[in-house]
Amino acid sequence: MAEKESRWPENVPGKFYVDEQCIDCGLCCGSCPNCFKREENNGYSYVAKQPDSAEERAACDEVVESCPVNAIGDDGDS
Image (tube, rainbow, N blue to C red):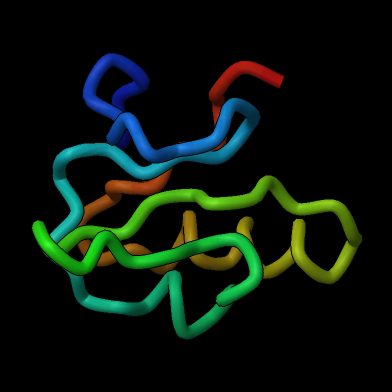
């Protein structure tokens, strides 16, 4: 389960975030590229934009459930 205390500093404030458990599998960036981006130099993903449509929220919910290491949290600050 993702932990707010371990989220990457690149995450924008809001409900969704990626923490230090990320293994850079690319699932989130591939499933919701509008919201998730990859930190190229260190090899992890982060939330670059919080979802602002029902479609993006559904995609974010899906990657929370699909993340192989549970590195994506959905309990950040709103």
